Each structure stands twice: as structure tokens, then as C-alpha cells.
Length: 332
Image 1 (cartoon, one colour):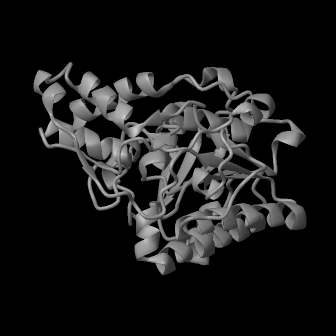
Image 2 (image 1 turned 45 degrees about the vertical axis):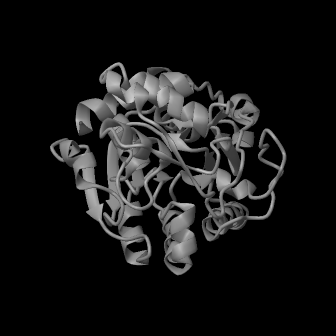
């Protein structure tokens, strides 16, 4: 990803928590490629060692194998750090419904540990992965940062609590914070396996195996699918912005368009059939709806454009083409 226009200082010391995960490893890779010194903190509960294996040889990369639920690990990781990009979390609405205690321990207690460690280390700014799940049962479309509803899952509660804690740390301790409400991020390195795999890589792998993907519901639920490079852009902008009104707040990170699951499957079949023509004819199955799912999600990105200069380059089609090509090349 070319980030030369974002004026990223190559001398930053940056901590990426969850740096071996999907989003975190992509951030580590881009930051290292641009000459920054990067520390990755990960316990490999969901992160993968192969995501960062190629970075170990770089003298600007350091791995700390630790857990954000351990305050000592957080303090160690924050030592000498200028900016924190906090990506570590237990994602997935179904996972949080099945095991709310662990989701809370990681996403709330672990988040608080990181805030404390960042405050004590006097980091310049703390950027964290928030979530579109915070909008809960709000029927407003598009979703605007200042209007949210009641959470629909334990995961959504944890991510909203993150925003509340970040706000308090900004007001009470003067720690600069920026929350990024991610909307259905997808792209290279996203894990297609496991019970809680995201929908796009899961569908891609099923289609590549000539298996029929199963849509939860009738396929009319829609999402503002967001390619990984758009997310990287906003993380970097969160570190580089110098506007006072741009910090100590939250932003939607999305493209600003929604795609329903039926259309998503059609696009995936179209782009995958370039590599394997048989994929175009694979039938799609439909199953019951999923508990805790929000029917529709669409972000307003006007605040990010206005205050952060956000200019996402990847719509759903451009992003899917990139993602499908990566999966075909790396996982076929």
C-alpha cells in the first residue's frame, strides 16, 4: 500500500497490539515498509505467526509475546512508544454470545490495561479499534457517530465500553485517543477457517473448494464492507493528524456504500470464476438468521472526511478483486 501522501514520520515508535492478527499484521507490514520502528504485542490466541514471520528479519520490528489481560505485559509493550494502534480484541458476535466472560476479559479489562499502560508511558496518542456493532438497534441510516442504539450482543457492549473508557482517559488524564468504528473489514490475511470466520473469506474458501456457501437468512441483510487498505489509511491518519478537534473522538471507518449478501455472493463468484469457470455455477444455500445480527449497516464517512481527510480508495468491487486474487494465490 502506498502511504507516501500521508506524511508518516519514519522515526515513530509504534506499538500494534494484536499485531499478528488480520488487521494488525497488515498495519505492521505497511509501517515497517515505511521505515517505522514497530513493536507487535500478541498472545496468538487468534493471531497467526505466519502473518508476521517475514518481518522478524527487519531490525525495526520487535515481537513481544504477551497478553493484554496482563498489565505487566502492557507496560512492557508501551515502554518507549510514541503511538499505540490497539487492535487486540476477541471479535465475533457469536463468540461473545457463547462466551461473554472471556470476551469481556479481553475487550474490556484488557483494553483498560492498555489505557493505563499508555498513560503511564506518556504515549503521544492511543488509537483503538472500535466497532460498528456499537450502533446496535439504531435504525438510523446511514450510521452517524453521534447517534447509537442499544447493543445487541455482549461483543457490542464491550466495544461501546471501550469508547466510554477512552473518553474518560482523555478527559481525566489528558491521553489523546481516537476510536475507529470498523465496518466489516475484509482483505488479505483474513482467516477463512474456524467457527468464527468472517463471511467473505469463509465464502471464498467454500467456493474455491466447489462447496455451496450458506447465507444466514434470505440474503437481503446488507453491510458496508470495507477493504483493509481503507482501514490502514485511517489508522495512519489517526497518528498524523495535527488538528485538535480531530482527536478524543470516534470515527466510522467504511466506504459509505452497502452490499447485501446475495450481491456479495454474485460478485465473489464472478471474480473467482476468472480463475475457475466452474465456480460460477455453484448453488447457494440459505439457513436460519443469526442471533445478534444487525439487519443493515451503512456508514456516514463525512466526519472522517472533514476532520481527518479520509479518502477511501477501495469500493467493494475493487477490494473484492484484490482479496480474491490474494486468496487464490496464497490459499488455493
